[in-house]
Length: 426
Image (cartoon, rainbow, N blue to C red; front, side, top):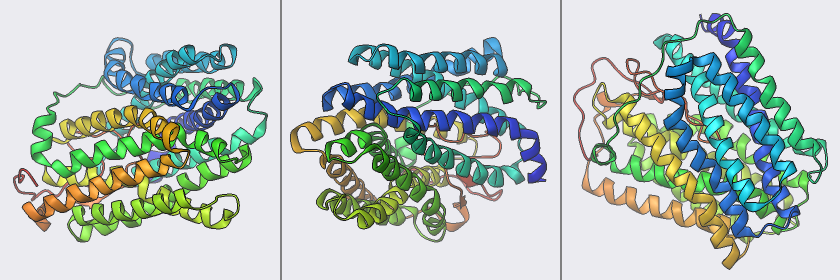
């Protein structure tokens, strides 16, 4: 049955892949090109933060656009806007114009992902949601990894790579425009209460905020870090690719481990490992110790890109039945706020402490999460085993997480039918 779902939704998944390849290329290209254009580290951080400002705006505006115009028209509108924006980066390489373009890009791409993911969620049955989510994870991170390598197709100082990103975003319209799958009804926008979400699971909320900050810092400033320490474009692309592949490979085993123990303990272990790996990466010479640097980057990506999934699963364990959409939307908002701050915070640290401060910032955030989770473990017990669902990975990257279905529960968890009432303040 999953194979039949894949055949039906192959067009949507193809569009998603093209989007992510184009955005993976564009994100790294902008970081590298900013250095070529003479942007300071602070200016680069501000520009890269603009994506997540737009991302938050897009998450709020896109449902309203879908209600007015429908899924396919909204997709075509936003893909055209994102494609045109990609070309304008090359025409006007100035800090303030790039900031405005990054905001437009973030809003457009968040809306595009929302169209694809809400369509998949609405038309997928509960029993096949897990398999489709696993495929989604591979497409998501695999496409981003491929996009990193496309930066080697031409000189970053030329117009070609921006044009290639624009073409990929434009091509993403074609599968959706030709699909025979019927578009779902318009989505609803749930009411959010971060205070109530914190009461449900303080660790999940704080962890999601810090996961957003560290992910945003990496996606925004890793290319600048690579340039600052003398890596060429080929090695920057390899570094970014290895981190993404690490997240794709290690997310499932680390997440599954959290099914068999208190998820907060797994978060403590991941945070501790991320802190150690970050300090290690900050201390070594990536050129002289290339193999060690890539191996550590692989493990770093596995920890960095898994934090959000485990936090999301933990929040679902503690949430009351029927609150899935509210919890998922709240975590998405908190992740976006952290990701918006991350690049600028990293640029400040790198300006004053050096390029290695990118990893030092990650270490500080990881240690803060570890300390907070330890404090919460000492205060409250874990949710009972019968209230805990199975982990399913949720990619936290340039794309918003897989959206949730209000009847099926959080995408990170297969909620059990006999689940009891929630325990607050876990």
